[in-house]
Length: 294
Length: 311
Image (tube, each protein chain N blue to C red):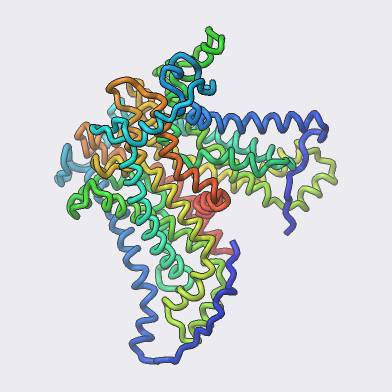
């Protein structure tokens, strides 16, 4: 099948028409960039400049104080620790959660595509649906179970929650990827006497690079950005970054330090933004795999 | 995605130990390996769903209680004005969110599909909000729309003193600010889905239509947009289930206010369960949310999986 690389040209293709086209596209680019630019600009402004001036004016007196304050001084919850400990919490939560859910998802994807057993499509269907449930339906029993296990309000508790509810997507990603892998190679390796794990380790894993990257990005972004589980299952000393940011911004005591809020918001966005900029192509692929194929 | 298999160069042959136990183990290994994940999902997803459904038929308040009282809580739930506010807000927010994201996404995809120089720069700019947390998005738009320091204030400082935009503080209009922020975050993603759809259309069909004398507008209206049906369907399913689950954005942007003006089912569930100590009502609202999501997702997954099997 021959596919189009570009659609049919709208307008007459005149210089004027092209100019309008580019103008519209640039206006939209400004629309998407504006909130980020405003956050950045106002995170390096003194507070009185925000109050007296306007949000889109560049700072007259540059200052990094809001960033320092957001990082290590601002009042978050009851303590004036800044966002630093919560930033660390988020990494302590994200790294094991992504790793464990990915390893399990890879093995599940391998089993679900290369081995047939009774009821395998029902198993997959049940795993797949679990990706889309509104998490409100599991909040109450999960709180009880975490309490019973003695890990309520801890980072390991959050890791468990994110592994459990990330499994569906990691399994889906690896399953769709391995479905395109030639099964004959697996069969001939079996004939040669290679066992279950040896086939996975030597044949599938070496060619899994792209899907590993897609899965890491997807899981990292989702778990870092999660708020509901963080707000429901963490204590003051185990809160992730999103919850701490919300506490910082919505705390009603004292002067509203908008510049500190903006710096904090950019700090919370930074890890996922960096991932996106470094590997945007894989990020899009993950979104598509989660949506179109899912 | 294409999988290459050039890496398995080492000989995989090993001296065979053909013991029955080993062969039996190899037969069972796939199931044994899959079992823990499957057990976890059965317990933590489906077990928990059953638990919450049961809880919604008890008289639980601050703590779970296990006395069965039937469907009374659902009757109570649908008698609560707050729940109706949440449903009405979800209807307004959800429909506008889906429609505007689709229109904007399609427009941007078509415009980007016109041999644009710099597409590689524009596309990631349209899409990056999707990488942000809704808490970050909510914070940015909360202050941007705040009359005290945001758009209003900025326009006044620039000399347009009669300008007024106070939707975020207005009970009637606040829900639309949630739409504005949510559309900003998700429309680039819908653009990417439509662009992928546009790039996958067979050029032969387009060429045939062009030979028949169809102009570019007609071509889009009659042929190309109708062929994007699968992309529309995916976009609808993704956006609809995101709308039903919306929680973080409202918390960060308006915290459900002013008053209850931006209350959604997700914020209703949380506050009734955890702060108002009406756990059974909260559980009932969660069950209703699950049913809404299931009514969209299940038919979609079913059709996706059955077309996959046909191929």
